[in-house]
Amino acid sequence: MEVTNRYVVIKAHVDGPPKESHFEIKSEVISLELEAGSEDTIVKNLYVSIDPYQINRMKSYSSSQSSINLAAPVNPGEGIDTYGVAKVVASGNPEFQKDDLVAGLVSWGEYTVIKPGGLLKKLDPMGFPLSYHVGTLAFSGLTAYAGFFQVCKPKKGEKVFVSAASGSVGHLVGQYAKLLGCYVVGCAGTDEKVALLKEKLGFDHAFNYKEETDLKATLKSYFPEGIDIYFDNVGAEMQEAAVSNMSLFGRIAVCGVISEYTNTGRKASPDMIDVVYKRIKIQGFLASDFLNIFTEFLSTTCDHLLTGKMKPLEDISDGLESIPLAFVGLFYGQNIGKKIVKIADE
Image 1: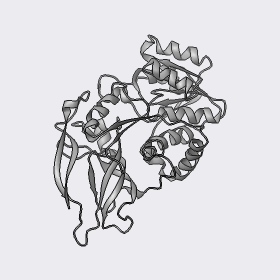
Image 2 (image 1 turned 180 degrees about the vertical axis):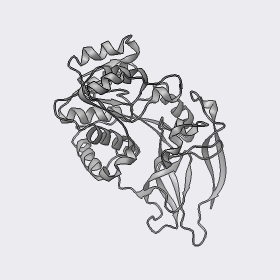
Image 3 (image 1 turned 60 degrees about the horizontal axis):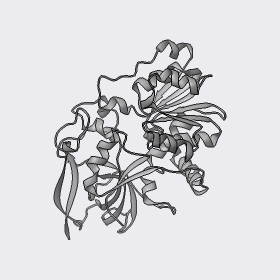
Image 4 (image 1 turned 45 degrees about the vertical axis):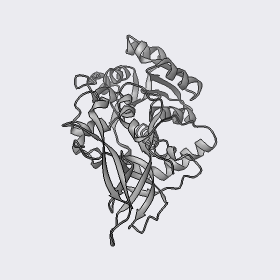
């Protein structure tokens, strides 16, 4: 049986802010039947992740492209891989059977042909929506969990600041921190998001950074005794302001610098005297550094979800055609929570 597989590509390298016009949908005819002896797995994509870091893969050059395979460059016209949930339609791999639900590296497309050794595992939904396994119970959640608990080494009662706090990672970090008994402040880009952080997610305070003219003074007002932990998702001026307000032996986990991805002129320039004399730890990290604690993360987070102590935020668009707009919207603050595109029903 043959089908038409549609998939999203970039027309050319994207070296500035992304636009919908940078993308196009291509199609190809593929067979859903494997040749004898093939060890490939063909899956029908159901939900795919939309992540800001992908912009660095689309650039003509980024230093990140040579750091890890998951950040490898994407060339114009090529399929774009991402994390997602899918259903097996044919498999020459004995680990997978037709109709199995799986999670792993798929594509921004309707179907993906996965070679032996590809990042793919059988998925037990555990009673949760499939979309949870794209974000909250996948790399976004692991980033939040590992960055907070492993990198920052928090203690009960410490004072925590989270930037992009209504995003895919930030909203989870804040909730982990509150569950530990920390004082938590987040920032976001709209009043609606600020209200959500305080009223739904239980942050102690939150503010709209777009309305603040002096970020250092703003943070000082929320943290008069200093910030113990800063979870950095944005970089640039926000990182500078946080460093100036850190406590002695403060810890900063840097998992993303979205404000710098599309503007090469914006760079964080923290006062290194503060870093030295306050003995501040600043550590960049990737979720893949902490796959060894995935089972612990999953067990803990599932318990919090089942008891209602954690509330995931998801922003789900429908259909392959919505991928370009969904991706572009990340850089204009249009998402609330984890951005996901639903490609198909089971």
